[in-house]
Each structure stands twice: as structure tokens, then as C-alpha cells.
Length: 225
Image (tube, rainbow, N blue to C red; front, side, top):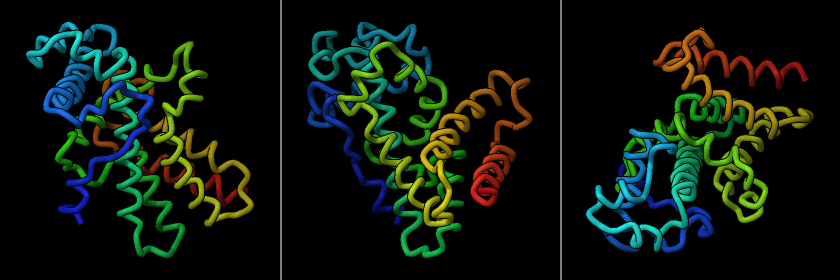
């Protein structure tokens, strides 16, 4: 299974880029080096000028692939959530018990992908990038327009799959999408807090307590409906 999924190049909404980056060596370098640089310096200090120096290209060439650095961050975030959806599908194949599938979904949301190798982008690096920077991809004044353009399709698709599993476990539960969205966002925040704002959480960097907390949150919420 690992050998199959590591070769997958996920699809994201084409509105996130001007030119498909994996269509050329330069495009591949832009997303790989861009992801690493965004993780190292943050969106605020990241520029296409710095990225051009890293890739050995020009700013103009980067703009042929991405409209701006905000779109590049959204592209990488979307790639991560599309990868997470593949992880969920592969991990739950042939598992008939919805509670067991939901447990896998919770663990993925809290701990990140279980398949950690990919020939196109490094899932571990993307996980760190999403924890530290992804909130900046949608807490903007342009979020409504971006929503309409499909910028968050991959986030929605992953969330919807887990929401459907919740509805299998308890068809009468009223708020599956709200619950999943809460866990997706809060688990990233708590992963960030455990490193940078430790007084905001009891959980440690390794995440074992985070999984227990969110597992209890999800299954208790469904059971107490």
C-alpha cells in the first residue's frame, strides 16, 4: 500500500494556480522550495524575490505559476488536505465498522497523515506548514470570493468524508460537519500551542494527549446526542 500511495500526485482546484506547477522542473522547484521557505520564515517574510534566488529563476517566472504568495500557501494547504483524504480512503478500505473508521479519521485529524512518503511533496513538511501557517490562507478579507472559486474544495472534501462516517455511527447526530470542522481547526491550534504557547494546553509535543482529548470529544458528543 505504501508503495502505491507514495506515487500519487494529488489534484487540487486549478483556480489556485496560473500554471500547473508539476508540469515543469521549475514549477516543481517552486512548490518544493516555496513550501520549505514558507515554513522557515513564515508568510509575512516570504517573498517571490527570495524564492527566485533559491530556485535560480526569476520573480516573473514564479508569477507564471502563482498569482501571489497567498495563492501558493493556499495551493500547499489544499495539497495537504487532498493528501489527507487519500490517507483516509486507503486507511479505511475494507473496514466495515463505522466507529473504527471514525477512530482512524480522528487520529488523522489530530496526528496528521499516516502515510509519510510521497514522490512529489513531503507530507511531514506540509503537516508542519499547515500547523504553523495555514490559518493565514483563509482568515482574510477575500475569503468569500476564494470560497466561491473553490479554493477550499480539498478541505471540504476531507471534512465531508469524516462527517459521513459520523452520520453512520449516529444518524441522528445534528452537527457532523460542525464537529469535524472544530476538530480539524482545534487540533492544529493545539499542535501549535504545544510548541509555541504551552500555557494554552496540557498536551505535549508528541501529541498522545491530544489524540485522547479529541477522541473523547468526538465520541462523547455523538453518544450524548
